[in-house]
Image (cartoon, rainbow, N blue to C red; front, side, top):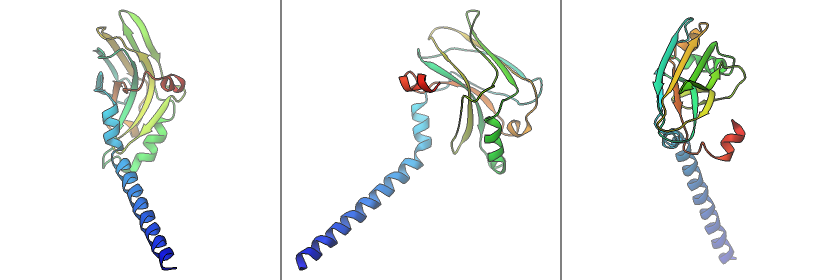
Length: 180
């Protein structure tokens, strides 16, 4: 009987140690989501401030480093002043945005449109994002982005948004093509 009690106590200790270890690892994983996001994302090919004010226009040239698919995202940074409106910002990003854009390379349109239909949106502790399109980038080529805001969206403009063109290191996977 004494032997069974010792085995049971040992099993309970092992169970608690494993549970504590799993909780620690889960907490570490959640804590490093921002780190993970930064390390799977290459440096943006372009990131420029934009405005959600009627009539805003931006034209900028850029090049890409890798032959991969690149995402064009609207980025709304989170800050103490925007925290009370997080739900409203995220909700607004999921709707049609009053924008048009064109990306050209050697005079040929490689991506264009507006934000109708939801592509994808995401949120982290640092920012809310909305993917508006993607395109296949080729190193050594010059691309030109033209971006226009057709109407004001004060809740997004208050976040000091930007447009970002970047890739994830796994973006050429088959999963990426199925999702986007």
